Image (cartoon, rainbow, N blue to C red; front, side):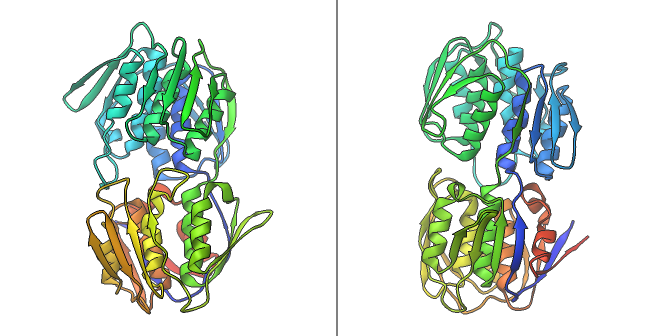
Length: 420
């Protein structure tokens, strides 16, 4: 299993190109199942989660061809299966995104209950209740969800009890081919949801209310071919912005967009960093040594502070001159990075769903272990600022969400090496 070795203490300076968003690309790939015409996606990141989704779609009969390093053409003209098997789904929870489009197009779907990061239960109840509202029949048996709608789906009004990003995406795709109008109330407002809606509209869907918490979908009989560019990854942009801040460096985040990370930019400024909009992207300059301020955060659905940046923010706050209270409201098991940060000298106390971070003068390199995708990159950030060398184990998590991480950091002066 690969490891990453980092010798910290050097301010990062340079340019990092922000990749396409993994969390946008995965539902966009699943959207190809809605039509027999080709869907071309550009700005697709090269990540292991993308490979897993490619394998799943190929198993369903989708023909996928690459047209360049970040462009793929997907054609589901000849669906050969409606079953998403456990062996693939267990690797990545986003596999459940094939559920809605398969039921809408083929009238049935058999999907293994999902796996993925161990950061909480993340049930798919909302997906199933929403599909039931559209007229689907649901059966849970032997670890699989069996969904049938032999006469097609019918538009309905469905209110999400709690905000669910993948739930909204699944029902959005299902409703695109349903008979009549569907209203999704308390829908997720994340940019990745809006990106999917824009792509579906380009394919011939009729979706309004994009970017709000009420999505209105007027079902159509079929969708057609389209080309769509995946939005830039706001989580990657936020991560490297924090990298500039924690090392006291200066990084131009090429392709990053302020409207995608408004809260992060605001919080970084309060912590003492500078965030400037440039023609190419965002320029982030870290605070002077010893002047980083503690800033409290609470994770919330967009446009609030993203849970996927909570671990990274915690790493930053370990070196603040004060204290910060970090409250996690989305997932119940997302503080697994805390013991590893404490191994590096951080002072963190957990109280239920909150973590009190008392800043320390310095962190020191140590052997640590990654537990999930965002926790692993928080350890990379801490290592970049720490004295000495840190060795991070189980870094396969990083490959799920960060394209060419070592190359991008090396180009900015980091001392980082992957050990095979």
